[in-house]
Length: 468
View (cartoon, one colour):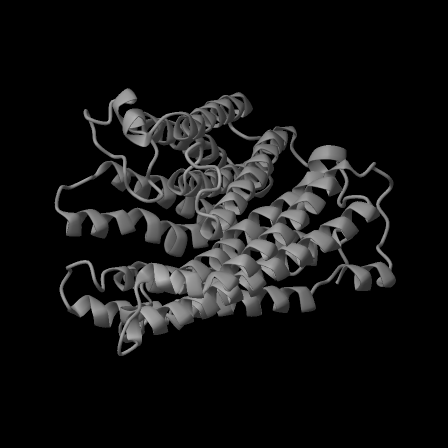
């Protein structure tokens, strides 16, 4: 670790992993409720479990992005973080606010929570992924502004690199676009249109910039390839991500009441969205093949390559499968959408945060370039367990979605919704089983941090083969 202030990233990463475990627990609860509908009812009804599951996903990824930034920015800027104390203060504010919000979801009915938090004064609640009470949203804005000020001042007073500039662009976009969560028009079409300005332009716009910059940083550090080469790739990737991502928002406008031309614009530009993810895959493997050194942290390299490949499959391939308007007419809101969402989030954002944690934690904990040999083998096992499980979850949900579309929407005599759900229940059971395997992989990953430190040594070929 080059700079003492980089240590503030450590609590962010620990909190991220803790919340990740919580997210998967609630995912398993939901998976079981799909087939046993009264499980934990009325204590934790499905709508509450889903709200907690998705909110924990967003919050722990934000913790991961912030921790990655606090580690990455000082090293790229070649100076200490502007204010480590501010970073730690914002950590506790964000953690306490997030915990209280989750407790609120679980402890009181949502309508009561809205009354308790003054939602009638500035109505913002009740929308998917943006269920947070207004007071929590205000707290998120305060934390985001303080965070941007801290990393922004570090960049402004230090070395300017393409990695830092792209990262700051993504982080600024993340904060600015979240402000649309406060705009809640009574017109339902306008509401959904601007709601996508937060949700879509986050995950298919500015978050991609954050992901690309973190991936570029890790590849610079682990491959030794010239920074200029990696930066040129980064520029091209983010340009394509922004061009396709911004206008690709139109694929969410197909059926909400917007003008018909969005069916053409949305189809064309969202069909191009796999391109930057394919470029990212080629970029990552190119850099690793051209590496000038064998970095001892082989686990981090595996996570980085996995990020590129699975992001292309989840966000690119599975996104393209149902993004054209004539196809989306039948698949919209089906289990195919859920399949795409799971693999895309895992590949693009879960894996990039775990990549950064894998790379930086050995420096943060022991000031060495790699975790102990046994810890890295555990990480590799965790990668394959989680990744294979998520691919299986995606395939099971895709199969369920295809049958759902056929029997419920495309057949000459469509079946009722619940009749179809009963007929595809087998795939829900299979998804639930794969979810437990994923959870096991996550526990293996967490356990790797409890391996006793030793002088890092090269992992043998036999151990790499076994982990793969």
